[in-house]
Length: 160
Image 1 (cartoon, rainbow, N blue to C red):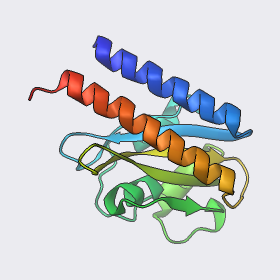
Image 2: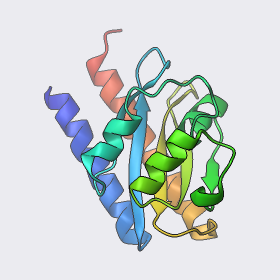
Image 3: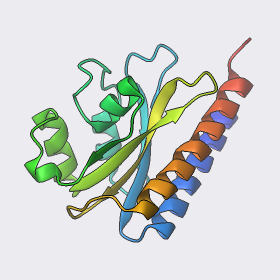
Image 4: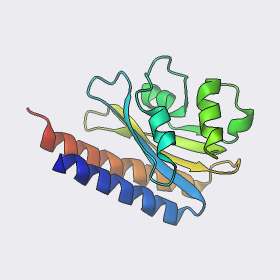
């Protein structure tokens, strides 16, 4: 359990750093389980727990349920500039985001050593907006940092 607490502390600190570098942002992560069939864990320190709870256990099929699911299944960064007008993703996911004040976001895959998407780093905003060059750079850094933290955690806690 100490390793789980260390990982959560590390990822929470990473979210805080991203939020301090991108004013007005809400940072968070989703993490799959070893079977990669669903989102096992969600961490959004600046949002009510109900937001993370609403994403936890979300299956990765259908692959277009929401931005994180699509980013994981396709291994691509997914950007939604205005969730209120989005018609591509499942309305339940869109409504869940809007109910928690999220109007735009970017979900970037967190890749493990085997170049397998194992989760996403998310940067969201309370207003519609398109991503900036700074957002892209910051998200690449954050997803890579999360990848290192998660891979180290898995190396320390899984046999083999």
